[in-house]
Length: 362
Image 1 (tube, helix red, strand yellow):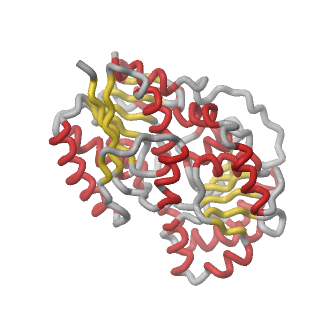
Image 2 (cartoon, helix red, strand yellow):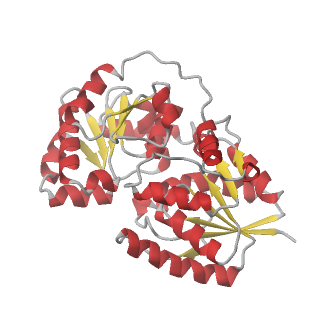
């Protein structure tokens, strides 16, 4: 009798992570996977393009929750996920990362006494103002199988009293994805650079989407100011997240942003990795983009006061600048050009997904 796993995803970083594991599950005859998409990210640029280009199976369920306040969105997900769990009766629920989809999936399963496995367990920014931090902590403490990506994550879980037998340091599935998809369709994606009039290492890539930045007028205004200043040094490519677009529109700055920055629509995984790989520097508040910049040996300036990926800061791959306009520019002028060794294996060897599938079936 095969093991029945119900995988819950909802946001674009989770689509990338799930692709690595789902691809290997499909090769197994002893594991059956049912895929649930909560609809947290729901338009083409934030969702559909990832499923098509990463060969992720069509979700068995698309819950269509959409955007809403933190509590309303999570609550609606809980209701709809519970219905699916009662119908499917899986042996285990698999969740990824730190989004509201992660928390809702883990909570719904735990309430029904269904074992939970958490990929990317043990990460901490130590800032509980961030909704993602709350999601991480709760999910880890109601999971029975915790897949830690780094040494630091493993240590944190042990420090919090989670039994060592439940913790497995497997590496990072996003590194698996970077290795697997590197070069696939690169010639097509390189057309993006030509289309945008860019040359390799001749531009800066910037992304902003976290609520701590978009929902605070002062922080967002300062970040936009910093990016505008950077655009006087090199073109700044700015894939505009829907939440960020709405926030900039509320400030009446959208037209000014378009005049200073090279604003584009959100891009798929492959195009995003091409931009990360060929940028002179990445400026971001995204956790996933911080790691991908490291994978592609691109210095990263992070628009946050802390990060869950402390190893990147410790070894000089990542520089935290908060939302400070002057620090953003200063980091580009000094930090980006600093010498650094790129050969450290911080996130495993690219076999995280295989180890996860092995442990799920053991």
